[in-house]
Length: 484
Image (cartoon, rainbow, N blue to C red; front, side, top):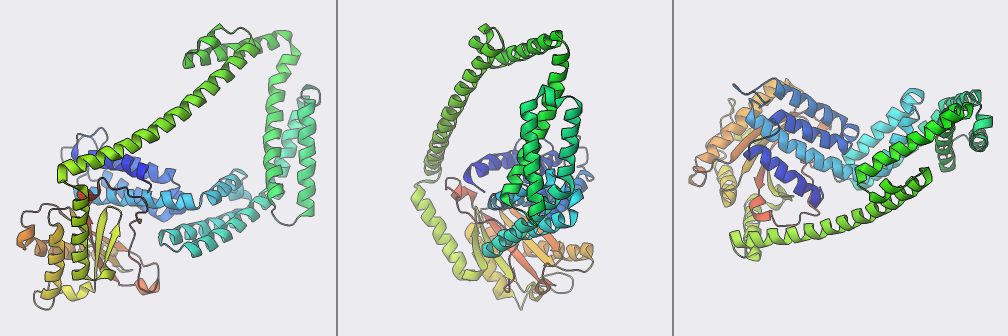
């Protein structure tokens, strides 16, 4: 997620957790789901979007006792769902930026009726698009670009099929309706232009078997001009039938411009008399507003830069020398890496993430920790975590299984709670109230993931990183198996 969006979302998240709320918990989740959708998450990751929506709906059914504003009766579920939503927003923003030209093509093809007139091609292209988004999410850029190219070819074939099977017929009907309203007399110039465009597109469809960019551009121009012709004829027909109607039309336009003048508080527009003078005054005002908007954007960028400098100064004041603080953080992370191993520790944005696998060796059949065989392994883990004992720490047990998901989730929850209890038994954590747990069960996406489980431990480093520019931070995601 880019820096400005992080700045926008983090205070919103903290406000939800710490301050009196103007939105209920479920309303806040729905607001974030809307942001996810704005970044085309519903198109790129439809399964995730549907799952998040269902989980929000489920939380709505569990209100907090005595609550009146939609507060959830499952605060930990709400907290982790909030974090997951923010991670998905991060992912959707990145992938939608990488796939933006393809998404624009998809939107154009959809407006042509591809879901009805070229459904098999359109939905096949959607599937390739979603696979490309998933590949970008998993840092497989080369594979993502290949899938995106395949999706583009399918969307283009769908567009050609729509032009041939649907749009040409619709445009002929629209032109005939315009002729029925005397387009040849009321708007002859526009009619000739539309008829020439129709002839060009018909000729190209007959001579070509596949999509071309020129055909697409000509078809879009034909759609615009044919609709313009119809609107012109509808407007001009009553005016030509009666001089009173023409005068009424111009007076109405002048009144609309006067209303615009009141909204923009422009004295020149208020003084202007006559349609043409009002139009000229409006053009001048729009040019002025455009110039002011560019100035404000430039000023906003300057203020944002100054804000970052002030945040760094505040951090120095609160925690001492900033460089020393960053050096201390680096030393702590390095000690964790030495204890746990380089391949088990990752930095993901404002989190340090530790992975622990082979979890079946840690637990007996009733999900309690085995106290002898793994004593050294658990001691090393707790020693590593003690470097950040005062920071929020999130223990996430992740399991891949096709079995009874509810039962499997219960076992996973018991295991992560057991681990939390064990960590709290160490002196460094007995005063720490910032240990959080969650369990997630997913159906495996690849055969090698079946019955795989691991512990993902996320250490919140915001106290250290609140003044660090997070450009280039990696998107949090499920850990890949070694064969991916």
